Structure formats: structure tokens, C-alpha cells
Length: 114
Image (tube, rainbow, N blue to C red; front, side, top):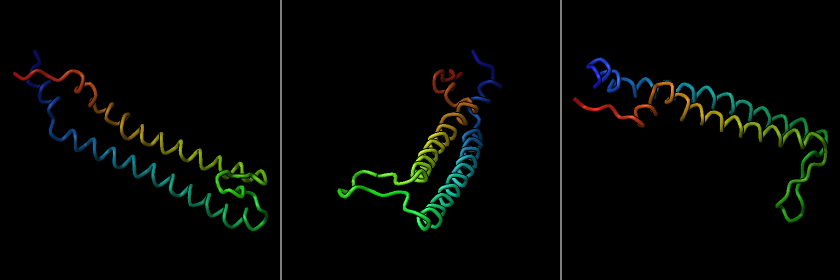
């Protein structure tokens, strides 16, 4: 049987608010980094690589990318890395932060009401 202090800690009404604020700030930081990185990559690809040389194209049917130069591999690979950053952000926001707040522990073992 839990003590009153343990029950009050489990049913803290401010815990979801604190968790939401932490999730939101983490999401905004990750998203800002990914957004700036994508914009820089797109800008570099559009201005520098495309003007100097054709580095990326597609087949006549329009369904397959063709890498004409090494920069095409870099450009696409960097976009794939950004997808991994997005997946890491989702794991951090939706799993790590709630786990640190004990959200999943309470879901597995709900406290007994007195």
C-alpha cells in the first residue's frame, strides 16, 4: 500500500504540464536545427551545384533519380540524414522525455487508490 506522499507524486497535476513544456521545447529546438539545415542544403544545391554543373537528374520516365556527379550523392545523402534526425527527434519527444518523467512506469503499474 502506497503512502500519501507516493500517491500525491503519482497523481501530480502539474506533471503533464511540465512534460508538455519539455517536449515542446525539445521539439522546437530539433525542428529549428533540421529546418535550417534543409534550407541551407537546398540553397547550396540550387545555387552552387546547379549553376556549376548538372549533378542530379532523372530518367525520361521521371521515376528514378540519376546522379550525374558526386555532388548528387552528397545532396541526396544529406537529405536522408535529415530524415534520420527527424526520426531521432520523434523518439526523443515521444519516448525519452515521457520515460524520464515516469509516464510509462505509471501506465504499466497504475497506483492503487486508497
